[in-house]
Length: 149
Picture 1 (tube, rainbow, N blue to C red):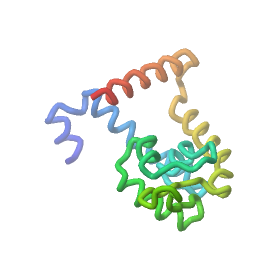
Picture 2: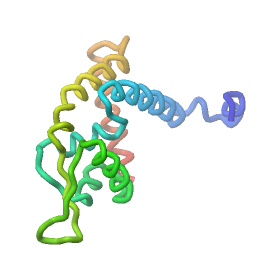
Picture 3: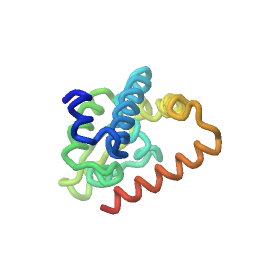
Picture 4: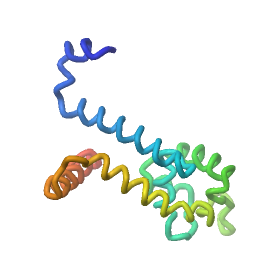
């Protein structure tokens, strides 16, 4: 569907359309920045979820990331091959798999912090400090609205 077709549907002037465009552009830029340190979008969220260095069950990790268990399983397979996480069966319950960030993964924390700082700066370029604060508060409200539905 081209822009003329979208305009004819009357959706290009909706907030939802604008959010979708911003989200897509933001994700693409995040992917570019994270790829510079060897990560893919989403892996940084896994790093944050495992930041304390403790192991968690795959089910708990899926809940922390707000994704399906199967999604976590697929992602962890590649992350394990890359040496970013380790997985092992829970000694008390062999049905449960425990996940832990490796030192290699934890070492990427500073790179993730820097990538996000760059992304924040690029995302809010041209906004005043007050506008950035308001923008953050509004995004928080929007996220809450969407999580409640």
